[in-house]
Every structure is written in structure tokens, then in C-alpha cells.
Length: 164
Image 1: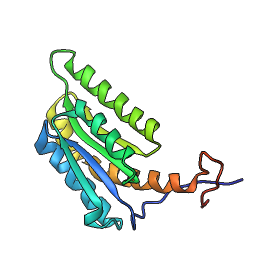
Image 2 (image 1 turned 90 degrees about the vertical axis):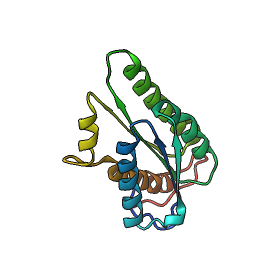
Image 3 (image 1 turned 135 degrees about the vertical axis):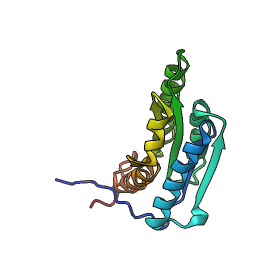
């Protein structure tokens, strides 16, 4: 039996972050957490690129472009969507989730979803360096793990990766 498993070692990795400006004070803390985690795990600061988009709905478009560029081993998507009185929340949150998943499927590059969909802004703040930690940090570790795992898995052409 072969077991494939990724690691959080970021040495030699190039990672992109796509972040939504809407609810930007919270998203900026998610970005800070992701950048700190990437550097703590060995990614050089010059190998981290951040693209800011207007809102969560625009994240998938830019994430797909970055993933398809061939420059990055993973793309981290960060944003906040807060429920309001209309269906806008559902449409934006679902559109972001579907688009981010599609970007990963279409490109074969891990595209990590960490768009916080919450009922009130305080819940997002708690997950952006508050009482519930920083989901940006967790997204960064997920990105590194998935990039490493993709390297280890057999390729689509049948070439073996490196098993751990």
C-alpha cells in the first residue's frame, strides 16, 4: 500500500493570495495571518503575491487566472461575506465557493477556499485573529499541504510522484 501525504514545508514554494476588499479590515487580518504562516513555514517573502479584488464574488476570476499562470503551486482565497436581509449573501457566498472549486478543477492547482460566510461581522472578526484563531493561517497551511500532496501524487500522465 502507498500512502500519499502532504507537508507544510514551504521552502521553494510560490504562493498567491486573492483577497476581497469588501470588509477589508477583517480580510486584511486574514491576509496577515496567511503571510505569517507562509513565512513561518519557509516561503520567501518575495514568493508570496497578493491580488486584491473588490469583493468575494470577484475572487474566483482572479484565482483561476493566477492558478492557470503556471507561476504558483497554490492560490489562497480570502474574504468575508456577511448575511443581510436579502438573498445577496447566498448568491455571493455560493458563487465564490463554486467558482473557487471550479478554478482548482480547471487548472489542477490547489485553490484554497477561506471566504468566511457569517451571520454577523463579529463572527468573522473572531476567525481573523480573534477568539477562534486566524483562518488565514490555516488556509496557508492547507495550501502548502495540498501543493506538497500534488507533487507526491501520480501525474495524470501516469508518472509517479514521490510517496511519503
